[in-house]
Length: 351
Image 1 (tube, one colour):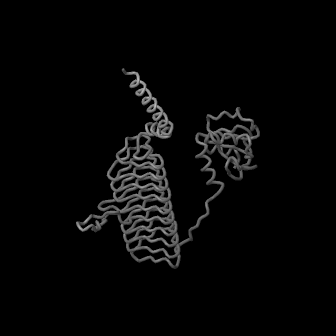
Image 2 (image 1 turned 120 degrees about the vertical axis):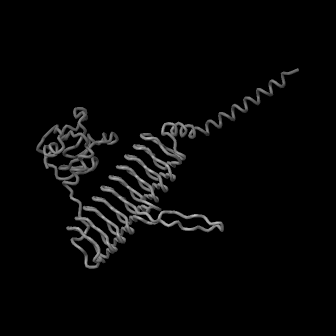
Image 3 (image 1 turned 30 degrees about the vertical axis):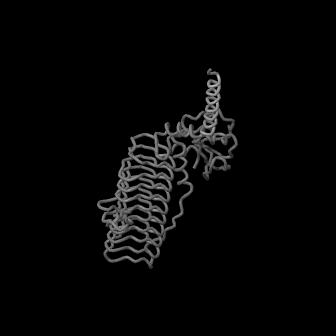
């Protein structure tokens, strides 16, 4: 593609030669001749003058006159990072690791309903009355339990287990090791100290355009359903407990865990290693910063940090005080000594 073709694709503007040919994409610090890169993070501005890229995607507001890299062609677009990702897909097609058609070792009962254009790998096992939509790809070693349902154009990587009755929407991506519909963690204590297992009779439901990272577990509901709504994205090693509801377009980073019956709003950002207790509500557009412990419901649109989590600004003030504790302790000791000396002098001055 030429720089002008790229600009036209994103309704952008070329500053420099519009006929420069782009053959690859690369990071700004590693790019060479024929490469396209992008600038979206101020931390990387230092590389603009030294990069060997032929062209660079920048935001519409970027001042191209302030850089000494006059040889560079700048392509101004509304969002350089998103544009870079889209160009990446066009010039570097992803390899397809899935076999064509249905492998001879797959176990598929007569009751299963399979859409057109599907791909099913080796040693896949489908249960009774499973439904798989058109153009869906299922990798080697996957198991879909009785009555489970997978929509159209979904991708299930090797060694994924979808338990009985669970429902997977259209354009869903499940990475290796994912378990959908395992039992929720429910045990009633007996008087003798042992536990009675609570039956987990519900299902897990993933709506359209959900992506689940490697080795995540999404438990089935005790009664009803555990639900990930449209557009939810999970990183690797995330645990979603029974009867949790995760709202539209919420993103959850690695090693986060959400306890049972909690309701997470839409467009929430949950960072790595966040722990959320059960039976609370996380407001829409909340941001839960890394390693925070969330003991109660949060307000919409606010940022939380710490364990127990607090409003971000308050948590940062507390953190600043904690860092100063050694010095504060010294000051207090000095004050105590000064007060003691003052008391002694006062005692000695009395008749």
